[in-house]
Image 1 (cartoon, one colour):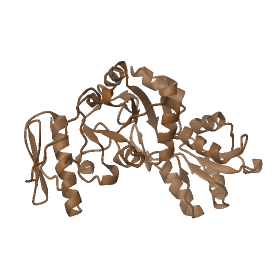
Image 2: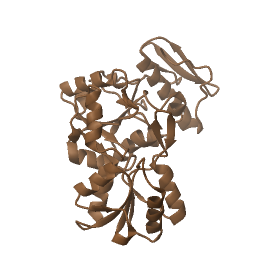
Image 3: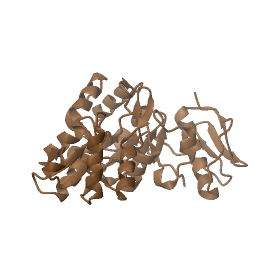
Image 4: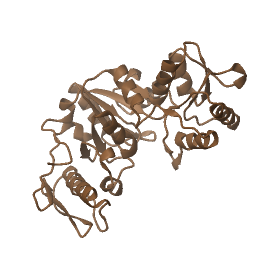
Length: 335
């Protein structure tokens, strides 16, 4: 039995909603991932609903929607769901309408809290009853200090996400998770977390956009795919973002995707699983992959998508059996 899933029909027909990560899947920075807008529009034309889901709590859905449309993606603002909305939902479930919430974050989190009938404040003199934290590029240090003190005093504390890095034009930079860790160390507490891989953001997504048979599509194993596993949902890992060969072969059961593909073109295609006979060699579409003395060996020729599938299959089997990832020295990527 294959560790990868299989679908005899195109994914855009097998699932009614795609829960899509954004950066590394749909776009990189300001620019579209090549082919992504076309693949997404085609999926919608076939009846698949798209939900654009991000841990980034700084930008409101309208700003994200504008960005998507500027890239040629047919998306409405209502299709965008972020961790700020999930954090606000968590807060609203625990607080009374009109409750004052100390905001450590940006415009996206401010708007999400107001949408839920809560009042964001920036002064401890206004006697807030909870702290909600999310990424904000213009956060003042005095705001962080005041929020950390309130957390240390025991106020309920909700974090939009715990991503340690965010992508920028000049490379990775510290994300909200770095600030969460700072406050957690200071206050000797941990927050409730709304974003991926925790359930609240996924639950918020279906509550807003609907769907009964979701497919999570992401480029990160530790947020997108791990979140899908936590929810019991199927997932597609695309290799247009942060995950490469080394990360893929080291993926444990808690963060393994159902399907693996080079890019979003996979939505329009069936997803076959490799065959693995007793000798442990995985074969599919002209490719063969095996492990020899702890090292990955791939031979043959065919479509890049099938290459990644046979590699994932034999690498995960080796990891489960031996407790460590295969060596990938000398392995050439397809294409």
